[in-house]
Amino acid sequence: MTLHDALSALNAEADPARADQMRAYHKIDRPYLGLSNEIPNRLAQEWRRSLPLEDRLALADALWQTNIFEARITAAKLLVQARIRPEDESTWRLIQSWMPDFDSWAIADAVAMAGQRRLAADPARLDTVEGWTMSGHLWTKRAALVFTLPWAKPRHPKPEELAARERILGWAAAYTEDPEWFIQKAVAWWLRDLSKKDPERTRAFLSDHGEKMKAFARKEAAKYLS
Image (tube, rainbow, N blue to C red):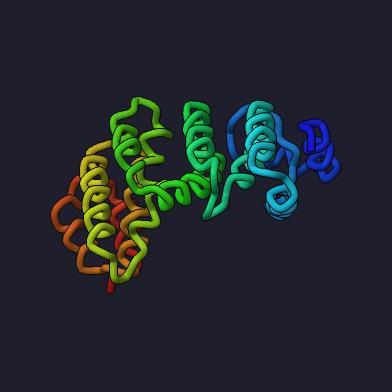
């Protein structure tokens, strides 16, 4: 599978009218093909099954470098896999190499789905993620919470999972003083997911730090709290 083949498959489904709508919606000036989500999902699934990992990594990076919206989404989806051996570290490095290019929530969140699996595979990588919390790049800073959402979800976390959860909540607490909308939204998202499994810890966080959050973020974080 060459880059030309992959782009031909994506372009075969292009919808120029929808592409114009997507450009207006995302407000980022880059090429759009106007594809529904189903098409990158389907193609990425086919290529994950048919390509060895080394070829898949090469194709993913080539698609990413085109800067086409749907190509970047497909690139991220090519890396969404729970178990990757023996090139897990290569996959993690590739994901990190893309992060300086993040400029929209849709692309950042697509990559996060792959990144979450690499963190779950090796939680020691949280040491690297902690460095992102001090980044001057909005989307890298935001990624520290979006990549770590799996730690919000266990109802009965193991001791090491609970320790990681508290570590991440410490990052979130520092983020509450950041006025940037996307950072506040990320804090709210993390807390909203946590509230489904640990409402008491969510209430405690909001009691300690809620006053520093934007009103919309407090409301979203408490959405599932009775």
